[in-house]
Length: 246
Image (cartoon, rainbow, N blue to C red; front, side, top):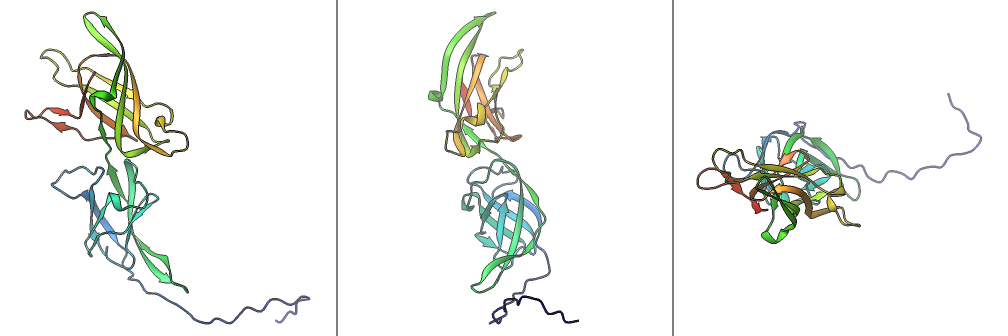
């Protein structure tokens, strides 16, 4: 059936060229993501990610974590390696999903188009925290039942930077408690929006206020979105670092 319109349509220009691309039908598959190093090495700031699986090599291979993307420094069919420092945006601490993608170039000029993506796997990125003696401020001390209780604040230096909307908690666990007494501890909440300055999206230093905490030496743990920072042990196998004296 031919229907003549009352108004004529615009005639498109002729197609000058047809471009195409090919990609393997085998999707990349991820089995494991870990930090380069001995078994059990935590994924922390500065880590080199080792991604193992199948069909990982392909055209325009990229590793994506949330909105951050990196081109692996090492590409093999069964292994990719990408430094956390190589991502185009800061990868936040906490639990994120990681995928591997393959892109093909189409069009004139050629531009990357998604061709294949792996299954997402969890990436547990642990924050790190430090606090020097000068970062502990004591505003007042009072004694109750022979125990000196301090009130003040701790400026915790964190890596990677913590965003406004992330949940940050500083855990204090007493180090070297005498025999016969349970170790003391405290849980400190971050200020509103983690103290991020106006005009910024994240921060590498969070002030945590504490009130009437027994004076002593405490091991620090920073918890960001439910993921704890790693702690070190001393020669006796006891958790000891990082620490602060309150």
